[in-house]
Length: 217
Image 1 (tube, rainbow, N blue to C red):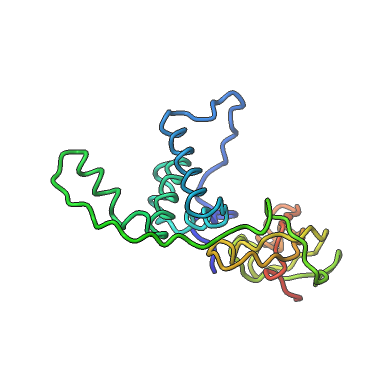
Image 2: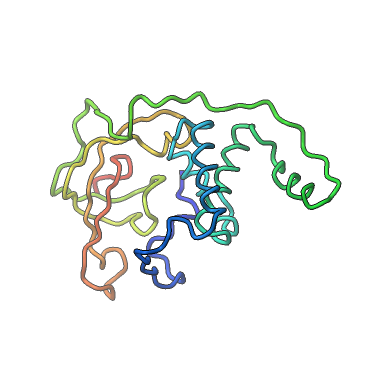
């Protein structure tokens, strides 16, 4: 499964990352607080608070819906996507309601038969225990290959394992309700010039990567 619209790391054209104001309120406008509550409620009712499924719903949004309505607008669009995926909402139901509230004579689409995923976490949080030993150890050279949460700018590049982390639920399968499939996770260090060429500054980028995202070069 390929990363979606949120895979922006290392891509040009987005300007500088603004520095947050420590005094800014949690929500700039009242609707954002309502969006937060609606999304949390949706995740709980549809997916058992499967954050990987929620992130994948955001990644599947068209660029316009992802970028144009801001952070909490993106949350609302993802919540709608999850409700449609589980057939709690019919496709187009929200648009029909908005048009009806504006005074149009609109027939809403038929209410579908809900098809919520049969999901239950095996334990709290995302850390898990696996019986198999890690495939890599500290100091090993590894190549990043592919994976749902592998940043695009790391793909195909070689780094060095600097730490073996605890096993973690694999988002690639968990996001689509196909099982937790926990894997070892590794901290991998990449040289900036390995990633962006000889003209890059000389610094190191580290990333936490699942075992299936890596191979021996």
